[in-house]
Image (cartoon, rainbow, N blue to C red):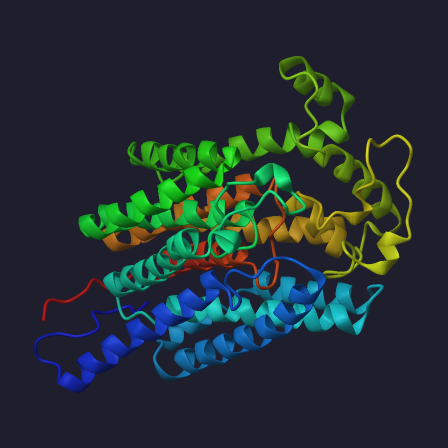
Length: 435
């Protein structure tokens, strides 16, 4: 987003055309990031392999567009904002760890495409000429996904609704829209509810209300209890603490919740005392089989806990399929798609030191950026939106794995929030000038 109003009454029609073009460009990039390049594609070995190729080409194209946008349209100061040392360190860490992974060049190649997608996210933030243009780009992306998802429910129910004949037959009847699984759809739609709130608070009330209602109803139809509980809780947590006028209270409250969730999810497989507390409150709790996955992953990680296995070099690999789970587990988790805990999967990929660096990027720096947000109406409302999205994703990551996942729209929105908070702390977002 620009530092100054994009156009005024004195500027020419060409300037206004460029203004509109930048907004459209940003809207298309955002839509590509959240819609993915294979809507309605179901997960299978064949579609996953084909999807990897399509996504690689698609995100490479988006990254090229973003770089072009940075060079042609964005102010140099904004572009330099995204060359954050911590982010560059994470890039280097992933590459080094992947280079020494069990799949070598394949992991490095996957990591490079991840960074291409993240570059595209920075372009989506740098291209809009002002705050209103950014909101319009967000609205376009949200409405595009919502329209296609509702169309799928009506016209393509076998693709947009979980079916009883599928592997996870217990999800039959639950909506997934254009995505492969309801657990992907739920967080995306929750983020769109936050988009609606952002628009409503920015005096685009009708558009914001429509998006929030459509997205909120879709969340309900996914049947995702975690999303249904977290979505209103996050909105209330951020907006109510912000109402006290404190820059620090929202992030302090979120940090407290993060610590509690960490202790009573992943912490239960490390500490018998914490597990005893959980079992006392809710006897028989195993987080839908996740505790066995976590125990297995932590045990296998021990020999490579300092460097990890490399990016996308653990779950779903032939090497893992040859391992045998211990008899202490109630089922064999070697066939799991991921660790169902985003923080654990970071450690699996790049080791415990890598997780520490990632937490600085994912939590510490964004929270500090929120506290340093430039005190203007545009910046405050944008920062509140970005913090709601980030907080929701950080909470959700204790049950799902999507951090640094290439081609995953949940990660795209997470990094959008991280980069957006960086922007609100460093630069004044331009307000739309009256023509």
